[in-house]
Image (tube, rainbow, N blue to C red):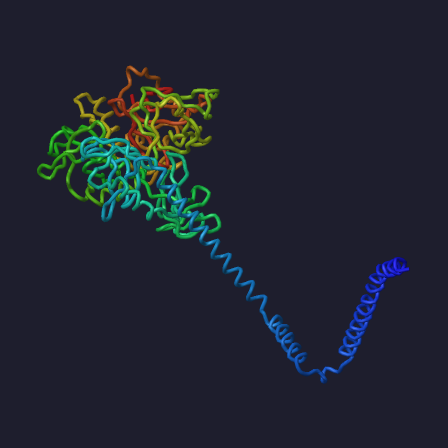
Length: 556
């Protein structure tokens, strides 16, 4: 019995544990349900309450939430945007400054052996040779940079811009000191981009107007940029076209001598003739009439003064060395001479071979219609690639003249600014022979009008004549009548061989079609006098300055 009881007691024991767990879970579940229900009731009640009934902690929380909402609503978005813009701008400026600094450094680093000119003002001359009297080929302003190529004594051989030459070493800073200073000199500059033999006009206003040209810039010149306009760049002293300039950070470099200034710089002690026609050059410092005349210095022609003697200057002009009057009414020196030379220097074609072919068109397929000689300087009308158009004469009074082109590809012609110089000339003496004396009088009479103007269709020896009008009027003064135009004059009188030509004979020239279009009068010594063109007027030339076609004797 006891064993069974014990078993009975044991069996319910296991069940009582399960019942016991069920007994605990039920109250807990009921408690959770009651709490949840209470929370729901409170929430519903709270939501249904009137705001005015809010009090205590709930009211404080509401005020805090309202305050936070109010703060968010009062933040200004525009202020935030401006703040961000300032921050971005500041960051952009820092980056730009860094980039600019790097660009400046790159400009300086481009020089392998930098030299920086150190002078107080003015210019440092760049010379062709390392000597104080070497020809000046360029000039460098203070703080201009150069590449030092070598050294000869007290001279640096340099390259700067378009200029190569020598500068005095005492005025040049080098090494790290030069590089440090050069960084401060890097600036926005406009570099002139034209052909080496061309120039760019500097104008007083940003517009194309023949009246507003105040100067010229040549290839490689650099100018500080003051302002960039639409199509124009403002620099110190005027405006240049933006089409012919490259604007970039750079150092200043040497400037090529102005093309006119280069023509003048070859004269060490410049003299300019102030007469309207010709100034006599004499073999001795005295006026001996025709006896000691050895040359003529044309109006506005240039010479070097070699010395002075008893009111006469000894000069060198071209191949002529002699004496001219030192009277200031006839000649200019010093600044007056320089100013006149700058006004007068013009682009000329200077032949350096005995004969140079002239063609109608700028190509070798065009026929050769005449030849020119090295004794003459020819005004330039236009420059083309490999060719230059020159002015020979105005041409046929009725049909006009031909265009005249010479090749520059073989280096037989030098195109540059130049001044007129003296020409060899010996006046004819009146010989005992009456016939020779008459010819001498005709020629000397014609020479009185050298320098007077060319006027198409004119016959006035003082107010203007064309080529045929000039010789017709000269001969008319001696009772000799010839036709009016050169074509008809070429049939007058009788033919003369070039070996028998005499002063007073007429020399005729043709155009490309072989038609006579120009006439001159032979004056001896291989020279002619003729009314050439509106640009040059009545002048003296070598008789074969262009190929002669025919010679006629209309005097005897």
